[in-house]
Amino acid sequence: MEKSIDSFFSEDGRVVDAGVVAPITEDRQPTAEELAELTFLREENARLQKMQRQQSLTLKVSEKGAVSIYGIGRFPITAYADAWLKILAIAPQIKAFIEANRSKLSFK
Image 1 (cartoon, one colour):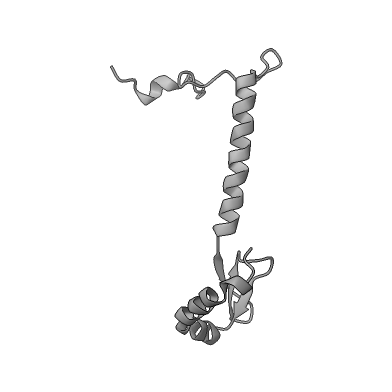
Image 2 (image 1 turned 120 degrees about the vertical axis):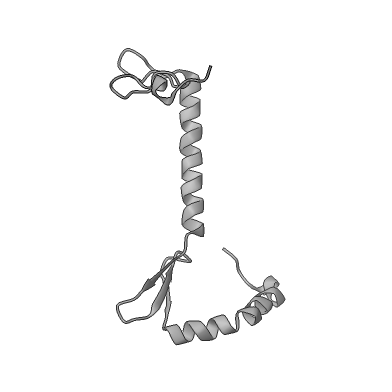
Protein backbone atom coordinates (compact mmCIF):
# COMPACT_ATOMS: atom_id res chain seq x y z
CA MET A 1 0.00 0.00 0.00
CA GLU A 2 1.34 3.42 -0.97
CA LYS A 3 1.84 6.05 1.75
CA SER A 4 0.18 9.44 1.48
CA ILE A 5 2.39 12.52 1.50
CA ASP A 6 1.00 13.46 4.92
CA SER A 7 2.50 10.33 6.48
CA PHE A 8 6.01 11.75 5.97
CA PHE A 9 5.39 14.75 8.25
CA SER A 10 4.71 15.15 11.96
CA GLU A 11 2.00 17.46 13.30
CA ASP A 12 4.54 20.29 13.61
CA GLY A 13 5.65 19.88 9.96
CA ARG A 14 8.94 18.03 10.48
CA VAL A 15 9.90 15.12 8.23
CA VAL A 16 9.43 11.88 10.14
CA ASP A 17 9.86 9.08 7.59
CA ALA A 18 11.71 9.71 4.39
CA GLY A 19 15.10 8.21 5.05
CA VAL A 20 16.07 11.43 6.81
CA VAL A 21 18.22 11.18 9.92
CA ALA A 22 17.49 12.98 13.14
CA PRO A 23 18.79 16.54 13.43
CA ILE A 24 22.20 17.18 14.92
CA THR A 25 21.91 18.34 18.53
CA GLU A 26 24.15 18.53 21.56
CA ASP A 27 23.10 14.97 22.37
CA ARG A 28 23.62 13.56 18.86
CA GLN A 29 26.78 14.19 16.88
CA PRO A 30 27.00 13.45 13.14
CA THR A 31 28.30 10.07 12.05
CA ALA A 32 31.32 9.70 9.78
CA GLU A 33 28.94 8.74 6.96
CA GLU A 34 26.86 11.90 7.49
CA LEU A 35 30.00 14.06 7.57
CA ALA A 36 31.24 12.45 4.34
CA GLU A 37 27.89 13.08 2.67
CA LEU A 38 27.87 16.68 3.90
CA THR A 39 31.37 17.22 2.50
CA PHE A 40 30.34 15.69 -0.83
CA LEU A 41 27.20 17.85 -1.03
CA ARG A 42 29.11 21.03 -0.21
CA GLU A 43 31.71 20.27 -2.90
CA GLU A 44 28.98 19.43 -5.43
CA ASN A 45 27.13 22.64 -4.58
CA ALA A 46 30.30 24.71 -5.05
CA ARG A 47 30.99 22.99 -8.39
CA LEU A 48 27.45 23.62 -9.63
CA GLN A 49 27.53 27.27 -8.54
CA LYS A 50 30.84 27.79 -10.32
CA MET A 51 29.47 26.13 -13.46
CA GLN A 52 26.36 28.31 -13.32
CA ARG A 53 28.45 31.47 -12.98
CA GLN A 54 30.57 30.44 -15.96
CA GLN A 55 27.57 29.65 -18.14
CA SER A 56 25.24 32.37 -16.99
CA LEU A 57 25.12 35.34 -19.37
CA THR A 58 22.74 38.20 -18.75
CA LEU A 59 21.71 41.13 -20.90
CA LYS A 60 20.92 44.59 -19.61
CA VAL A 61 20.26 48.01 -21.05
CA SER A 62 22.89 50.48 -19.83
CA GLU A 63 22.12 53.97 -18.54
CA LYS A 64 23.03 55.38 -21.95
CA GLY A 65 20.82 52.95 -23.85
CA ALA A 66 23.45 50.42 -24.92
CA VAL A 67 23.28 46.63 -24.63
CA SER A 68 25.55 45.11 -21.98
CA ILE A 69 26.39 41.42 -21.73
CA TYR A 70 27.40 40.32 -18.24
CA GLY A 71 29.04 37.02 -17.33
CA ILE A 72 31.77 36.71 -19.95
CA GLY A 73 34.56 38.33 -17.97
CA ARG A 74 35.13 40.60 -15.04
CA PHE A 75 33.49 43.56 -16.79
CA PRO A 76 30.46 43.67 -19.10
CA ILE A 77 30.81 43.92 -22.85
CA THR A 78 28.78 46.94 -23.94
CA ALA A 79 27.90 48.32 -27.36
CA TYR A 80 24.98 50.16 -28.88
CA ALA A 81 22.30 48.14 -30.64
CA ASP A 82 23.50 49.03 -34.16
CA ALA A 83 27.00 47.77 -33.33
CA TRP A 84 25.60 44.49 -31.94
CA LEU A 85 23.55 44.01 -35.11
CA LYS A 86 26.69 44.51 -37.24
CA ILE A 87 28.60 42.01 -35.08
CA LEU A 88 25.77 39.47 -35.25
CA ALA A 89 25.60 39.85 -39.04
CA ILE A 90 29.18 38.60 -39.36
CA ALA A 91 28.92 35.89 -36.66
CA PRO A 92 29.77 33.08 -39.13
CA GLN A 93 32.90 34.99 -40.21
CA ILE A 94 33.94 35.47 -36.58
CA LYS A 95 33.52 31.74 -35.90
CA ALA A 96 35.52 30.86 -39.02
CA PHE A 97 38.26 33.31 -38.03
CA ILE A 98 38.49 31.78 -34.55
CA GLU A 99 38.73 28.27 -36.00
CA ALA A 100 41.37 29.33 -38.55
CA ASN A 101 43.47 30.98 -35.82
CA ARG A 102 42.76 28.56 -32.97
CA SER A 103 46.45 27.75 -32.43
CA LYS A 104 47.32 31.43 -31.95
CA LEU A 105 44.38 32.30 -29.66
CA SER A 106 44.07 32.02 -25.89
CA PHE A 107 41.06 30.34 -24.33
CA LYS A 108 40.07 30.72 -20.69
